[in-house]
Length: 487
Length: 123
Image 1 (cartoon, each protein chain N blue to C red):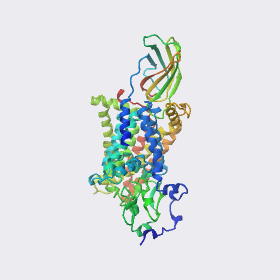
Image 2: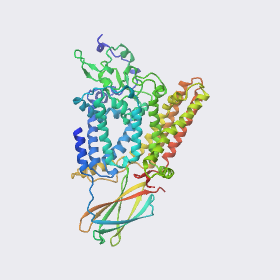
Image 3: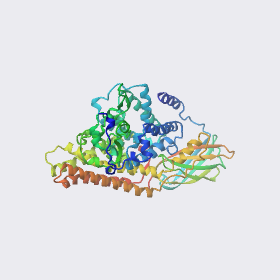
Image 4: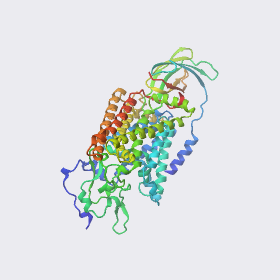
């Protein structure tokens, strides 16, 4: 049977809202070259950031590299993830360069089976958080520019050797952040009608659309091994829309859904497996959640007192070992203690014979909304309080070229008052707490249908502890130093 | 892209900031010391290469934080005594600040000096 003869069922009124059905926007996304069109401007901006970071002002608030990276990009990223989905990965400029490079060098190898997990990317995620603090990346246009260069180089090396989207799926720390956060997004790339997929024989969404005779792929299928009919949620989905373009039945949309709903269930997910069996994914969720608190902790006054005290206790003057201790506490000891205790209580009160680790892994995903709430609060604080600063920074960059056609820099343009932004921060943290409690209760209902409240309470306690810690952090005086151990 | 990276590396490697000739010396003090969030008095002396006070200069003092998104604070410095200038700065946040002196000398010659004020304390 010719697959293109399979009609999509016309039951639009029963379907969720579909972004691809929106006039103009939907047409744009369905266009095969939508992705390069979105990537190209970001690539230009990336190159400008590199150049300005290396050759522009050394002061971070006056440099495009630091302003765009640590202020605008992060702020817009989390807001888009909250309000829409993983659209940054769609417009990722690194992938555009990779595509060009792959015209010259075809990758020959498959990503090693032993590394087909998130452990490398979890390690890189931690490494980026660590170097961010150690080298004060936010204060250095120079290092920020080199970080972007290193990112481009890494993409080219990894995807130059290995087929498919190995970098995105197994390496990219920003991508992992987006994957985890997008589990809370209101949109998902998803099939419209399962029946159509059931009757489809070509499976172009995963295999790619091919020339009938030569069998050459003309439109790529999913490079992240997500088979649309059994894909669940946004984990590992870069929103690249390859599947949308490859599907001969126009049966894939960007559909609305209940945010976080994918965290409360544990079905077999294409390209991922079961969440409850993925310790690497749980570790990623832990770094995402506890790393959010750690990253914010690095920007408030008490961190300097803690660092100073640790430096005295350890008899060291260098920041690296002190940071190592702080990271070990935040990312290993604290999660082990909190999650271990909660799992132990759950086992004691509900299911006496289960091992602790699988129990902890299962419930860890419930903390993701809290973590995202903290990332939102932190990043939006910087973004909103410095909302307009990109204008004078851009004016200054252009003026430095000798042609100030945008006028002299208006440094008086800053952003929203901190007390106004604090309202947003509290809202994000409350939203995170509510999300985590709802997800955790959903997990408890699924895990212990007879006594969900008993299973829920220990994890609710963990959520409350983390939320109180987040609120405490948010009300600490900000203190931005580029020299942590200076006392 | 590889060429771009290599060229960038090469050019950047060759163009790290070089020390500028020390035409003007700056001695400064800050009150209260250590500096705290809020209004701070920044006093400094300007002298030329042979130690002669530079008088009658027009000086804009700019204070920046180390994080992007923080707007700079500006103040005009007043000459309290010959060659001795004073400006009142409002440090809005604790942390490290960088003070830039935008100096226009009586002859119209312009120069900039950068001074780090580390560890401004919270209130």
